[in-house]
Amino acid sequence: MSSKSTLLISGAGVGGPILALHLLSHPVLASRFRPILIDRLPLPPSPDGFTTTNASYATGAGVALSCNAIHTLHSLGLKDAFNKISAEGLTNEIWRTDKTDPSLPARYLNRLVCPAWAEDVDTGIRSVERGWLQSLLVHTYLSLGGEARWETKVSGIEQTQTGVSVSLSSGEKMEADIVVGADGTWSAVRKSMLPEDRWKPEFQYSSAIFGVAPRPQGKEDDAVIGRGHVVLTNDGCCSTWALPDGRQFFTMHKMETAEPAPRSETVSLEESGYRASLTTGGYSVESSVALLKKYENVWHPVTGTFGSIFQNAERIGRVALWQRVWEEHEIRVHGNVVLVGDAGRCMIPAAGQGPLPPPLVASLLIPSQAHVSRSKMLPSSPTLCSITQPPSTTRGKSHSMLR
Image (cartoon, rainbow, N blue to C red):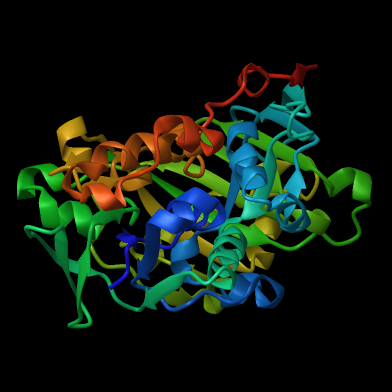
């Protein structure tokens, strides 16, 4: 019988693997905890084999990480590997389209140079394809001997005298000392623990279209490497963010009047003139294509318009935006079931929290020991603090420049 506490982590997106890696990479925590990742999707491809087109629909497009999130990755020894798959944002320019004709050259508003640069991580904001980041985290975890269950999810949770009994959709039952829900907006762990009127997030009456596009043809490095652009329109905004080698991910936002259907599907857009397939996010294909067509003529400072970006995109998705902040007693249930990331604090993208930082790891795990025997207790807080220092004052400062 293992003397380690079994910590079951539902969700292998970003926050779940970050937590699991903290436990395995710290010698004291590794001697006390046995993390097991669970995810409803198959094992993602390895970082060397990752491509935009073989990534799961659920990985989204890209994510821009600030210095606090990057520091977390550095603390796990992933600096070089993360830098290889991400691109530093050297500039981010903000524009405003013509109010009557959005295809005309937009009015220049502002420019951020090296936004959010911080000395201790020696970089500013870095953008990465979310699926590639997930791949790096998951395969690093597995290389350290981490355990995982794929293509299954939590279907039920029951408190026992010794911990938690977890039922999986595959039919398997697992016993754990602690269960962590890191399974996102529609958390199966949260659904298993909270009443019907409390577990669901709240619709924000807006949606976003996102995608990943290749390097624009014929453009020099100075025009694309590290260059981001935000173009404000009369009824929303379109933006592009730099990825490695001049590639980019794009987003645009739209206000909505009703929630989408609960089921999503992936369909080809070839007949509509787009290279990529579309993940609908519960919206109709027709409304999504109409939205793309509407914004095709919006001016872009590098490609002329957003049309060529959409048409050459390698993947396109649409997602409804949800938000809700749950109460503390709902995030930490019975002392040994906890929710992290979007599972416990679902925020719209502009208010994102970044990867699970070490201070949050500590704040969640320390109170969770109430139902774990004393022989399995965490080490005293001075020992634990070696990996749970809060962000430094340097990381809290903004070093971006406005021009």
